[in-house]
Image (cartoon, rainbow, N blue to C red):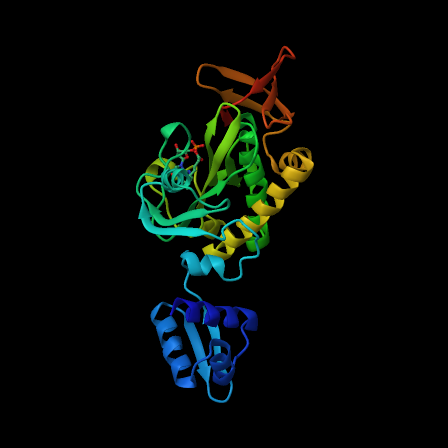
Length: 322
Ligand code: BT5
C-alpha cells in the first residue's frame, strides 16, 4: 500500500504538473485503472488536490503541507542525509529523540522530525517555541570521524546551508548572527543547536538541531518582537517539505566539501552571509561582557573580537548584541 502510494506520488512528481493518463498510471504501479482510481481517492482523503479530466487523466494541483517520511523522501536528491527518516507527530524534543536513537545505533544522516515539540530547547536549556504544523523542527545525526573540538564548525556549516536553501526556495537571503541564529530584517527565523556524543578524542555522533519558523502568522508575547517566519516575510505560505529537502541537499554538499577541503571555503561563505562581521558588538559570555569590533572567525569557527585597546579576544560561546 505505501509502496503504491510512493510510486504514484513519484509519477506525479516526474510529470511536473502535467496530466498522466489512468492507463499510464496503471502500468507504472502494475494494477487496474479502477485500482488507480481508488488510490487517487485515498490521496484526496489525505489532502492532495488532484484534478481528473476525461481522456487526459490525472494531475496534481496541490500537495498537503506535511513533513512525514513520504513527503521528505519523494524527490529528495541526497546520497545519505535524510534517507532514513524518523517522523513523530509530537515529541518532547527532536534533539532528545535523536540522542536516544543514536545511542541505539542508526545510520549516518538519519533525520528526526516532528510536527510539534512540547519541550523544544535552545542553548543553555532555553525554551524553543515549536507549535504544530507551522515550522520545521528537526535534528540530523552525523558521524564525522573528527575530534570533538571541531563540532562548533558544524553550526556554521549548517548556517551556510540553510541560508542558501532559504534563498533558493523563497528568494529571501537570511543573515547569519554568530554563532547560531539566522535573521531576516533583524528578527530570528532559525536557531541551530549542535550537540555531541563523544569521548575525549572522537565524536561518536553529532546532532544538528534546526528550528525554523516557516508558516506561523503570529508569535507568543515573549518572542513577538524578536521572531519572524518565512511566511510573514514573504507574504505567502511556503512548502516545508521542499525547504527540508533543499536544506538536506545543501548540508550534504557542504559537509562533503568540509571533509574534502576543510573549513576554509565554508568560512569564506559564512563571512559573506554574516551580519556581525566588521561591526561593533557586545558579546555576553557566561561570566563576562566584552565590547569590541567583530573582525572575523578563526578556522575553528571561534569569533574574533577586537576591543578598544586593540586586544583580540577569542569568543567560544556567547550571545551577541549588535
Ligand atoms: C537556539 O538557541 O536558537 C537553538 C534552537 C534550536 C531549536 C531546534 S528545533 C529542533 C531541535 N530540537 C530541539 O529541542 N531544539 C532544536 P538559543 O540561541 O539559545 O535561542 C533561544 C532563544 O530564542 C529563546 O530564549 C527565545 O528568546 C528565542 N526563541 C524561542 N523560540 C523561538 C522561535 N520559535 N523563533 C524565534 N526565537 C525563538
